[in-house]
Length: 130
Image 1 (spheres, helix red, strand yellow):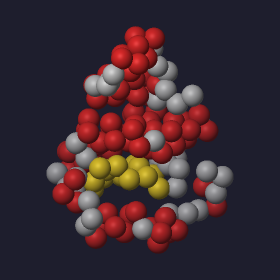
Image 2 (image 1 turned 90 degrees about the horizontal axis):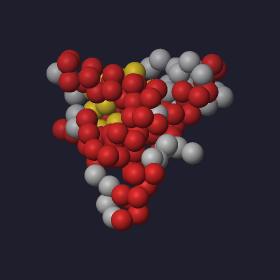
Image 3 (image 1 turned 180 degrees about the horizontal axis):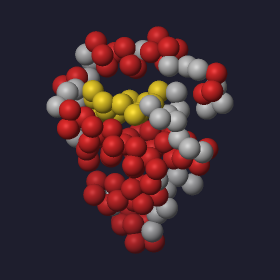
């Protein structure tokens, strides 16, 4: 299961729309490693004042890798995180998380990161199991 949904939040969802704040709080509680990585890359993006920041440290275990995969492979979770933090996320090779300012989406750097070439250049023998 991707998220630990409380009975209260499930009841809210059954009655109608869930707010981004409620959803993001569930993500933060359910996927703490993924939350930490995304928070860090988003903070780096804001503090550098640039349009790109990334996190390239492989997760310490398959449990943490699984959290990143669940968070960034889900359109709902990724979209919620992007709205919460105010930037676009990109994901590469099961661990490399990048944040781009919304203005940088479509830029040369963004296109290089999300391209097949960018994916291939970020491969290594240590990461082939992901």
